[in-house]
Image 1 (cartoon, rainbow, N blue to C red):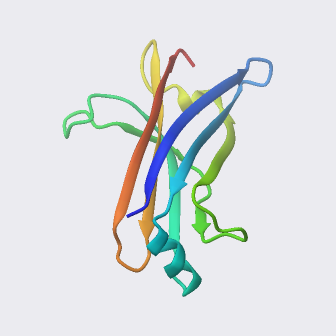
Image 2: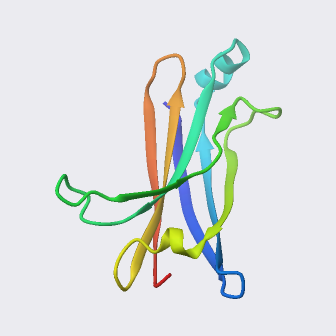
Length: 130
């Protein structure tokens, strides 16, 4: 199955406009078999979302914040690895998910549309007050 590596979240805040640019980057590695199968029609979809970190259990689950537009593979230039970038600008209030310091991370989910198998990767956690 394909793998996700080097998942990273960077958030830069513009205090004048009260917005935050949230950029998630990662690498997607497809196996040789998957690369050949994509020539025959196999497709993958990569979803990315931002979450506010809490305890992550059923009593206090992580808070969903926002989805990015998904990416489909193969793209126009199929390769392995694929470097992906998700970029969105949101109001800082969207990232204000806790009292005091907030903890925000990205979650990437790659799905094989034939088998339904999924691979997930979390980014680093950005800790700051929004």
